[in-house]
Image 1 (cartoon, rainbow, N blue to C red):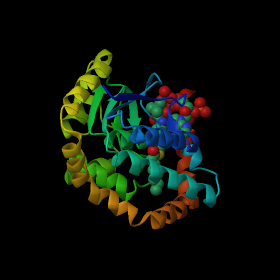
Image 2 (cartoon, helix red, strand yellow):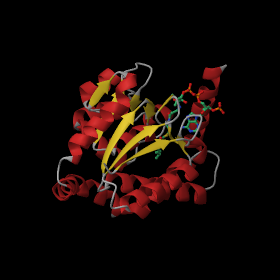
Image 3 (spheres, protein in one colour):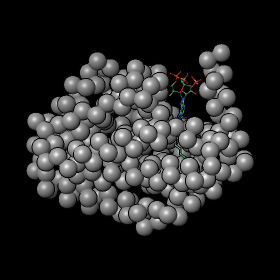
Image 4 (cartoon, rainbow, N blue to C red):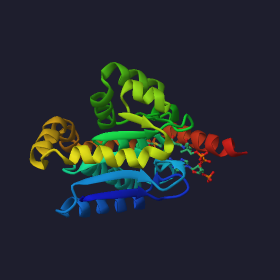
Length: 248
Ligand SMILES: CCCC/C=C/CC(=O)SCCNC(=O)CCNC(=O)[C@H](O)C(C)(C)COP(=O)(O)OP(=O)(O)OC[C@H]1O[C@@H](n2cnc3c(N)ncnc32)[C@H](O)[C@@H]1OP(=O)(O)O
């Protein structure tokens, strides 16, 4: 039926390393150019984890040129996903913090597994960093200004039930039904003529995408100088240590 399934596979936690981001963008571009493909189901092959978000090791202890290169690729993936002409449905089969949530938010419909261990949200403030304006814009578009403001300040990671309530996801289903539900949602969306659905999607999303496109270079510079600050590097160091200690 012209539907591809993209499975994220970057063990152990599907963090979005520079290599992973680049491969993701290239795969998406290929699918976009393949006229036989009308929809993509985005899911994970890592048990219990959809994506841990941006790779913290790409943002810690590197040089400004690396940060700039990394951020350019984060922007590129986001623009491709958010403005895709294809129908994107996410089958969220695990934890989905920060950049993981960002991937899901780019989709046209989000189905999440009903497992309270899995959480989703833009938790950047918990790391001592600030979600960029285009993450924020997409959050506001999805859950409204008040919920987004609260969730961004608190860095809320929602359980599936909470995520459904505020509208971060569209549907929560038993874990073993995530993929079948994503497929049935896709079938419903495929019934809509592509040209009218695509023009409607473009109408809804263009302003948000253009907002980044018109200031991409400045956004890269902002990111680079922010992430290079000693205080921010210290926060990331502490967060990485906390992740390590969790194990011990
Ligand atoms: C202007 C600045 C804006 C920048 C925007 C940033 C957006 C982002 O996406 S920042 C990244 C935010 N991500 C997180 O906060 C997620 C952190 N990770 C977790 O909460 C957990 O790892 C998990 C719930 C995803 C999985 O838990 P689990 O118990 O299964 O695995 P762990 O033992 O915690 O992790 C295994 C291994 O992976 C490393 N790791 C985890 N997340 C990341 C990551 N995002 N980047 C790089 N590495 C990560 C973790 O440290 C462990 O490493 P070691 O085995 O070496 O200890």
